Image (cartoon, rainbow, N blue to C red; front, side, top):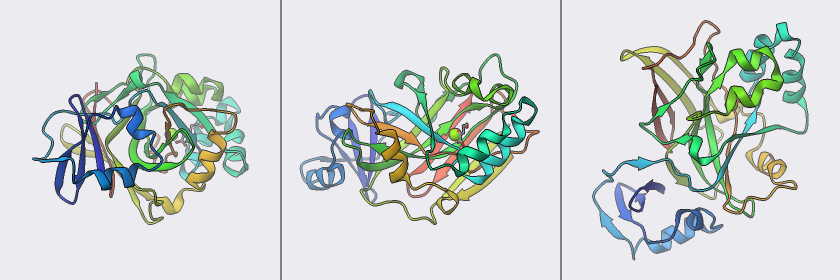
Length: 274
Ligand code: DO4
Ligand code: MG
């Protein structure tokens, strides 16, 4: 079952049928531990509608967005290389193997865009990539109730210059995209779930890559357990689980590029750079 947010209402897609939801506020809805059961049992009361044509918004209300880092070998590898000359490479290896994961604050809601909106490149950066990441919807009690797609836009030159610059490499206006919907499921996604990244330049493929959750080193539940230690989230939160796809070092995003991230069964998150 998929949950969409628009300016007028929330919508549920079940099979190929769409339903318009009730008046429940988004923050209240996504805070429910029984989200899947609530939506399933409400379908009979919701109005069946044609597929949503109003603009789909990012599936976020007042939630904070957090991210995990160096959870795939490919991310460890690329970051060790980019931080080598700054003497910071070793930290990525250590955090990849450590028991405690790397968790950082990625975005507040106003820095997040939805599908078909523009993500941004920092004006003071010359080396930028998208990071395609499975993203968890977590309730205030710490339950994972759904999944969306996240793009953790990253300035590799700023992070590579000094790992302490991480917040500047990661957090800025329109640095995060979420969507297109929440795939509501209390069950974990299968390990075989694929994550695919396509970057188009002037309509042609400039980079394509894929990975799967098999290569994700950390269990999503253990990331949540660390995130919720001495930390409360009154309306729940989103947690990006890290990237397993890093384009070659010669690649940097340009204005006008289109970024497409696909994770079945969630869908495809599409953003332009601008
Ligand atoms: O350690 C820096 C950030 C890592 C990250 O964002 C990732 O691995 O996805
Ligand atoms: Mg990332």
